[in-house]
Image (spheres, rainbow, N blue to C red):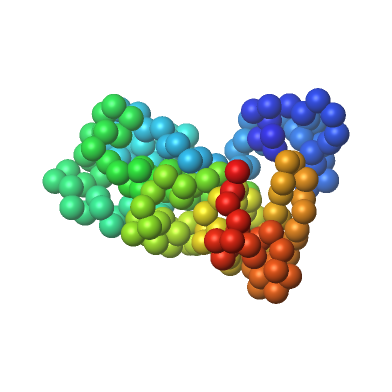
Length: 195
């Protein structure tokens, strides 16, 4: 909702104290980097996919964004490297590799606010470590909203909000919420299933 893909029917969402409805959509969206659960790639090279949304990006900027996101971890093994052509929405790449490209896109956009929406939910635990390292570097110096069911992705967050049916039911950092022994604790320790 903050990026105005959907406008709310009641209430107000503010961004730096300004009602988001008063901010031009293009301007608002340029200030937000988004990594979604499902990464969409288009026919083109890996470099072109990373540069999506930044047509003015230099090769050096693309490679730096790729380094931040750990894309090098798999691209160096491809015959054509960053010039490898992707087809069919990235067929041949794993979900984790696709996520790393999405993280590189967000790094290249260099937006002050990031929204990571279930960015690690569809990857295996081995790849998750690489993705988390990339996300960790990407998060430095930014405001980040992480929407996650996989709680390992949020343990280092400054503030964690636990929500149930649209309401905040717990708030704190990981250690505080673990000490409270509530819903977060039970979710983290496996004592409660997520609906």
